[in-house]
Image 1 (tube, rainbow, N blue to C red):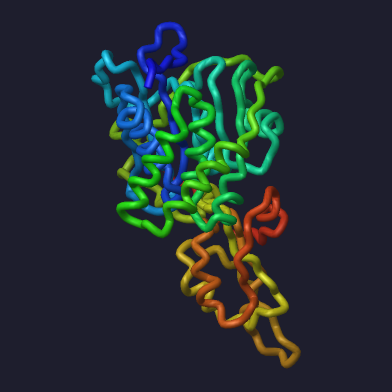
Image 2 (spheres, helix red, strand yellow; image 1 turned 45 degrees about the vertical axis):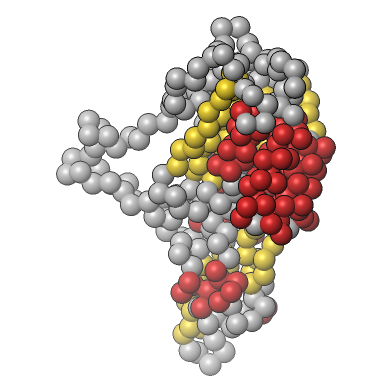
Length: 336
């Protein structure tokens, strides 16, 4: 293989990629396979690692990849603050995390979404001069019975044009062949479809690129903690968990519901909204009104527990959850 030409910007020593995701979508594996393809398959120097908290499914995960020439040592293990490429595995993350922060001018953003590239660029506020690519990674994964990570890996390989797609396929075969041989070909197909079905456009109208990166900081450090050391619990009263969904949510059919509350007993986030009503005989009973999707992370335990057809698995579509949400009547209480 000849010398690989890396598309560095002025002053760069590394070509850097940041993967923004949630636990369960496989961003760590996608970053690892991309790095292995460049380092083991193409002779580049590089590094990969991921950052995550409690390892809980549905919580934010970031994966970082660096590439450089073989003669350059990689002596840093800091997070990627100024990426050439940002891959967003879950489009709802933009509501809760600064996923575009630090993107280099002229960089590329790849998003798992069904929207057209320029439509997504306007929604996210992607700066002028950047490139935006969209791919329906979830749709591909559903059809191939795989996960979104190999579809996103295909899209990433295409925008990282110096990476040989055959080198990535080889790493897919090595990884899945050792652990899940039956899934090898399905994941290779998913990768190829992600590579081919990516739509890529340049943003000609948008905000000015800043390139600044603001690393998120907790407001509850030892200098900023409230009097008495009270930390508000991360309950569903105070949190929007919609970014934790992996593309699926429960659909409620009131006509099939018998108000048995089995769904509510298994729901970890108190998503179900009830109301006290009086029946025709004057008896008081609790009636299920619906689901507050703001607090639903799409675990689908309620569907397994439901003894009727009142709950069904539904692929999430833009605006559907908001249109069918039944809000809780509580309000978060400020402490401090």
